[in-house]
Amino acid sequence: MSSLQRGLVPDSAMMRTIMGHFGTGVTVVTAMADGEPVGMACNSFTSLSLDPPLVLFCAATSSSTWPKIQGARHYCVNILAEDGEQLCRTFASKPAPERYDGVGYSKAVTGAPVLDEALAYIDCEIVNEFDGGDHVIVVGKVVELGYREGSPLMFFRGGYGRYQV
Ligand SMILES: Cc1cc2nc3c(=O)[nH]c(=O)nc-3n(C[C@H](O)[C@H](O)[C@H](O)COP(=O)(O)O)c2cc1C
Image (tube, rainbow, N blue to C red):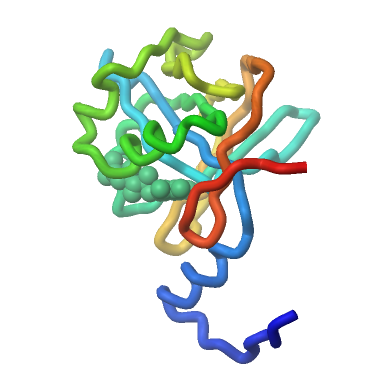
């Protein structure tokens, strides 16, 4: 086992590096904003409460998609399946209007897009927003859920991987 590097200073680069050691799933958070489907790749998603059913994700204050989701007052968390790497890259980097090119979806109860390729989805109404430094913590009350059989896409140390038992 290699030795643990300790005492590192929490500047932005080191925060990104160390937080990247917390392996996560990957989601695309979507909304229907004035009739336009919007979405962004997010791995800050987490379950918050079972009763009432609450979840959260953190949106960068610099994001151009976040104000559209905020205005829609709802969002749908699409958990990506193991073959969803390209979908993730598209929703993280392409210009916003082109993100849905060739991407199939249907609408959840809130009207937010459920991506055809999603492994599971969590459809929410926005009930709270909290300051989180250069991010906003966005709490959603869950109104509808769905899933199918399959395995998730994973994200670890800036790279994509598969789940293995
Ligand atoms: C794996 C991965 C996870 C990401 N997680 C988040 C996140 O939790 N919150 C966030 O604001 N941006 C996150 N991003 C970055 C956004 O997807 C990206 O910056 C954004 O879509 C840029 O376009 P925008 O201006 O439409 O927001 C993530 C990107 C990747 C590749």
